[in-house]
Length: 206
Length: 212
Length: 211
Image 1 (cartoon, rainbow over the protein chains, first blue to last red):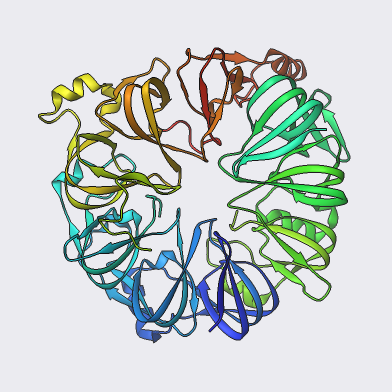
Image 2 (image 1 turned 90 degrees about the vertical axis):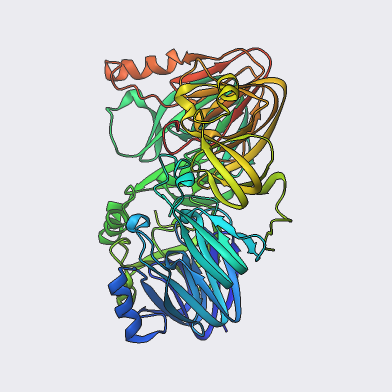
């Protein structure tokens, strides 16, 4: 497993020892040692995954970096958080994924009937296995627990991902509509119920 | 001797006592005390008063502040880093300099003069074609998207940098452009960079966590 | 490290860029700045409810009222503003004028008016409000001069005026032979503060003053 570390809160440092790491295309800002970069077809889900993405219009351009050395990844000075998975599954907006261990497998999951307004597909990305992944957020990543007693309502632009046994619903609430400012294009909220953790960013920017 | 300090990561405070400070035009946001402000221009190796040349996009457009008091500088929410020079020369992208004072000798280099490599670096990186060099004993402040990070380069560790993330460097370093075919294949429509900057020698390279 | 309904603060920052508020009394929130909430909350456009009477008194600013909603019910909500720093301010029989787009929320004990300076709101009385800023807020004592883009607001002091740096303009004018090329950066036209009070400054905004 490659070493994931934060060089500062916007710069991810990955140390490789003859290993591979997957990352968002073009996110490398510097490296030392001998590293080779390649386009990755998928995140490990095979040709089916590529087809699914073409259908849904999700853009998830990945690259692999392999070799020995230290690589620095960043994306638009967004804050980075490292999340460790121990066999569990993490549902995440693909645009928020910066880098992840080769040992993790990605896939797409149907996210429900969402309108065309968010500009995202009807699918969300899942990533699972044992390993580290790094997500980017516009502002520090905030984690909120969801319990059967207290479901969580979230602004779709702020949503990053979740883990646990959570069900996601779209709430088309007239009440919520009155809440919409000129900047926000969302006419719905996301409601999360069950048991788990939801990750959000304090921003409306994608 | 002016003293530089960060009131927070996006605000620079310079306390002056009958000193002259040069700053990126438009970045002075507040001041206390009494200062005379004038437009200045850094072209070639000298800082001239703007009155001496016609409006031009060449060189570095500066503002000079002379007097005593406190001046505050900021630029569009970017992070600021203060760098101290002890006789060395610092090379920094002209757009990334926010303030420096008379103690340092300033010069601008038109990258086009460096031949093909310089032109490529300038044109494709989409930045100004200028690098500012500052040398001597004194302080300067740079701006970056997110905190600037200093990476050391040593004789046994070469460093490769995405040109869009590069802010500047100091020390005994040689920089060359590297055309990595494999890297070229990876670049999507957004990012225009199909090459990397390679640094060898001994020194420090400053990068920002962002594509420009 | 995940927050739960119980562990969310009742009225405090979660970190620099986010703020949690427990909804009890009527609270005004700027539309679009809420990123998540727990509980049963009702949002009503200002001026369209039984609270009209309250609104007319506390929030007599028709141009701006449209950007706010009142929140009622039982729950805790989290505010975020595009990666800007968020801070809570306590006013004790004070008066503070602040760029309108930066006001994220305030309690109904405060009176909110449209300032005579375009683009600013004036909050008066005793109560709390939440405001965002582009960089942590820095407080400066007058006398001082400030670039308008970097100005967040001012408290307990007379209204500022514009100061034109004529010597700066003059040298430029003599060079160009006309005043047409003068740009309005903070070096030529500044906001001048005199008297006693506090000026709030921030790093410049990327967009012109937010509505």
